[in-house]
Image (cartoon, rainbow, N blue to C red; front, side, top):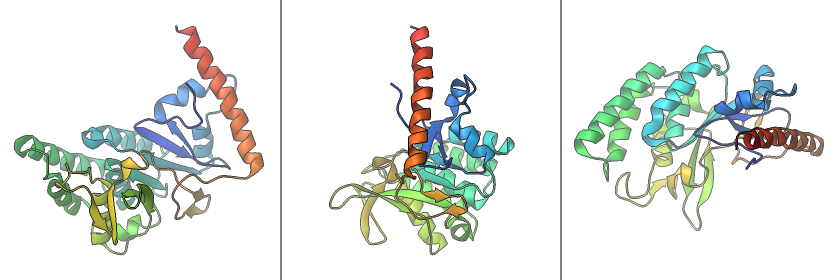
Length: 255
């Protein structure tokens, strides 16, 4: 069934004059029919595109490949806003900090080898923390502030999304990333962790694929879900209906 946001493990969060919209990279070719331009391509042409990475766990190499391809084609640039939840936050912070994907892949393989040899339950936080300290540069918190957006889930009184866009120190950034990756009980044996005075856990619990409130001139604080003006919203809804009809037609033609 077609929905307004097509979500997958690696997604574009696109801005084209209205609300943030999320599209999977695999949907690009499917949408380019009948002369309609995919909103992700339009946003990229207008230099108004952000990239959002969902939770992925040990599928992180997939993200690394996506980032390398987007960078190679000039779509993901040094100024592109990025966001992530859980393992996706590690990708977002690495991009904003200028960490090479080769370096990140080497670090990931060390994590995988450690977990294979020694297990995961209750000790993953320490393993990930060591690699974060190893990978991120000394000024990572400066590079990430207002460009990288890290999602955590506050647990009290009810689960609620919190997006962290500014970091006071490298340790503060590392704490945000570890909180975003905090799988209850699995990560270090605890249900949640204290982060900036609140009980928090894995960002993927409340917002698996982060969306951003970003304006053309840059990125700002937000918890996702912003709305554009009425005309822009109506235009996007009409385009969604057209594209949805095309998708349904393609699917019906194959069954």
